[in-house]
Amino acid sequence: MATLQDTPSRAVPLTQRDVGYQAFMMLRVAFSIAPIAFGLDKFFNVLVHWPNYLAPWINDIAPGNAQQFMYFVGAVEIVAGLFVAIKPRWGAYVVAAWLAGIIINLLSYSGYYDVALRDFGLLLGALTLARLASVYDRPRA
Image (cartoon, rainbow, N blue to C red):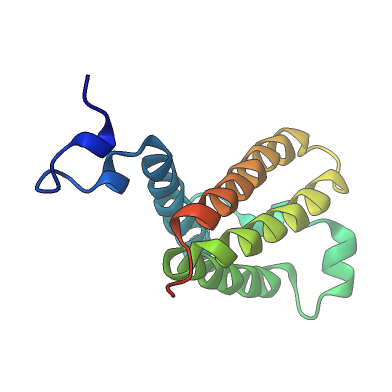
């Protein structure tokens, strides 16, 4: 039985057939598109009225009102998604840290524990992307 290493070089490149690389690419695409899409929605509130998810204590210390803070949040999410698209090895950690902040916000604001749990799963996915990127997004020598 032929292994991936035994196949002719004229076939699909080895990395593209590697299941680890495929997982890396799926997570890279997801963690590029989702933050950009959700970041854009912070400006338009089509999916949900985002200021409703802001803990009052954060609203109290943030300049402006909750919607204005959501504009800042949206901009950060767009930049984080672009960072993952360009350099997933580092961008994934930025997204993971951002998700940790969102989780803290949600846990401190009673009633959104289900969303916090979902975001914890996303945080684990972002960390998985970062680990895979250490293999598949290596610095070029």
